[in-house]
Length: 130
Image 1 (tube, rainbow, N blue to C red):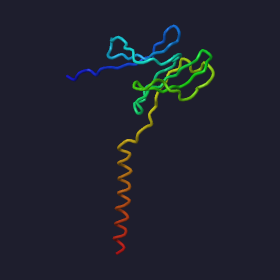
Image 2: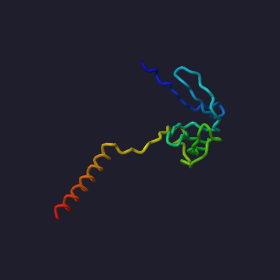
Image 3: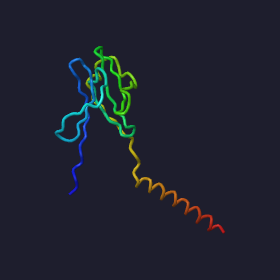
Image 4: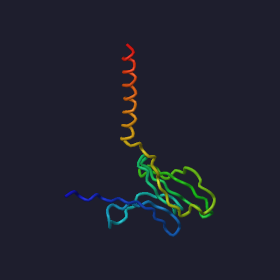
C-alpha cells in the first residue's frame, strides 16, 4: 500500500490591528506554523504560482486602495506589482493563478506525421519525373 501524500496548506491571518502574517500548516489537523510577516491589510486572496515559486496576495488599505503583491518564502517580503483600484471591490477577493494550456502530445504527433507525409509525397513526385 502506498503512503498517503502529506498535505501542505498556507493561509494569511490578521490580528485586530490588521497586521497580516503568513502561516503554513503541515498535514491535516496540525497546528499552524508562523512563516513570515506580510504587513498590514492582506485581507484578500492568496494564490501560489508553481512556475515562479511565488505567492500572490491582495492587500487593501482602509481607504479602499487595493494592491496586488508577489512574494516568496525565501524573499525579503511582499513586493507591490500594481494597484487594482480605489474602491472596495477587491478587499476580500480570492485569487487564482491560471496556467496556459500546453499542447497535447497527440496534436504534436499529428502535425509531425502530416509534415512527414508531405515530405514523402514530394520525394515520390520528384523521383517519378525521372
